[in-house]
Image (cartoon, rainbow, N blue to C red; front, side, top):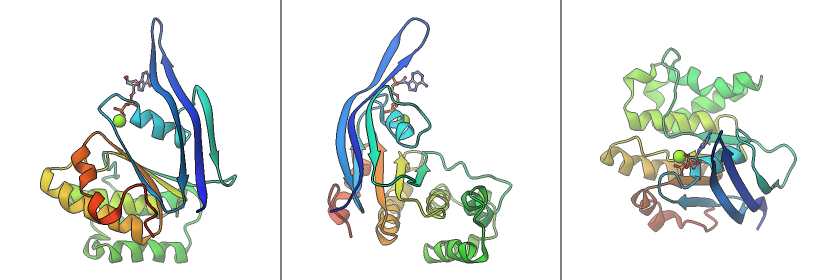
Amino acid sequence: MNKILKIIGLKKVYHDLNSEIEAIKDITFDVNENEFISIVGPSGCGKSSFLSILAEIEDKSAGEIVFNKKKIKIGYMLQKDSLFPWRTILENCLIGLEIENKLTEENKEKVIHLLEKYGLKDFINKYPSSLSGGMRQRVALIRTLAINPDILLLDEPLSALDYQTRLALSDDLARIIKEEGKTAIMVTHDLGELEFYKPKYKINKKIR
Ligand SMILES: Nc1ncnc2c1ncn2[C@@H]1O[C@H](COP(=O)(O)OP(=O)(O)O)[C@@H](O)[C@H]1O
Ligand SMILES: [Mg+2]
């Protein structure tokens, strides 16, 4: 099994003027390629800090993060979809490619294909306001996939949604990630959210 990532003794302490908060004490584990890992814990236990450090948005205080290659591409999906309201669904999904200066016709076609494949064909040229919360999160996932990341980080991707939508979308997200053959780390405070994945996609096991 190919290891994509090793996390060794990771620690994060936040400081302010008169106190310090130990957000991450000591995390060590490996991530294999095509694995879907879920980390569950209550609010404030350091989940978002952990993902932000992996995405290099935050610095770590101690420990090591070792990727299996030099240039690893990370896709980071947040709790709120953060789609730009003034851009169409397609334009939203092309942002990553624009930033990377890789917006070729071929890459654009791939993104259109992803949108079509995952039930958003009729919305490609619509604006986010015309989509339900669940569909917007699906778009957010496709936007994250559009840059073809090596690893996906999902920060409570379902928690802003109502129960019914969450139920439907959790299946969708797991299926899309599996079908696209991605490695993913999802954090959540909601054990229930996790249960939806369990029976079909065996957490912490190779899923392809
Ligand atoms: N930028 C920051 N500055 C200071 N403290 C922070 C910062 N970000 C998070 N924290 C603190 O670190 C702890 C973990 O936060 P967080 O990683 O957001 O937890 P979770 O995502 O599990 O809810 C919390 O006590 C939080 O208040
Ligand atoms: Mg959080």
